[in-house]
Length: 285
Image 1 (tube, rainbow, N blue to C red):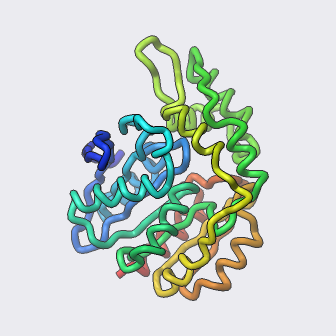
Image 2 (cartoon, rainbow, N blue to C red):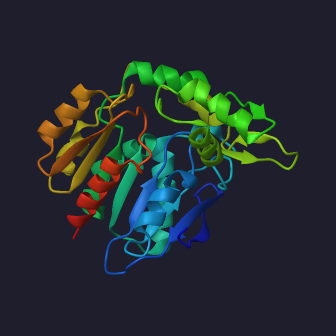
């Protein structure tokens, strides 16, 4: 495993937020990894292990996840606030330009960031997320997020994950599900295994009117000259093939790669995903 340092920064409303910082070459823009709705920095551990040394990799945990403090106001669990938080981290670290790798919600954040300040983006990876979200995938996330269940062992936790997410990873065996559980859950002081995020995140997510999704297509125009990689899980129920195709028609400097046999979202360790990320990084100047 690559060495990393744990760091903290403070949000505008006084929360202590956590990030991992993997050292790498200083003559390259760092890679900023942005996780999904209920995930945390551990989601990118394997990717960071592979890239660290050649690339500095920074993995912030959004408020309410992992080792970041839970918000006092649940309404602050929204992408605009997360971006404001991350901007403060980038300011603290003195980072002006970076490669963004965003999974799901992290990809939405990346597109919103592109709409405001595209010049900061040296490259972009959008992992199973696009300018439109499919209702099937939204409903599936709403069904499992925020349940607040606890489990006596990692095996019990793994089996519970398999029940709700096998559609996304049909080839996983028990060892894979245990590894997934250890990425998404934590062991409490009483020995129970719990999900590693504030359950209020799901409550706020459930209030979103997905019938009136914001228009994110202007972000594609802002990214027209930026190297972009779009990854889509072959079985994804959140990011459709049609949306992927329409995005590619608008982006001049992009590559789209379908990750076979997985749904929402690829782990970024799949051979085709890893190779595509390496091709993207080779374009970054």
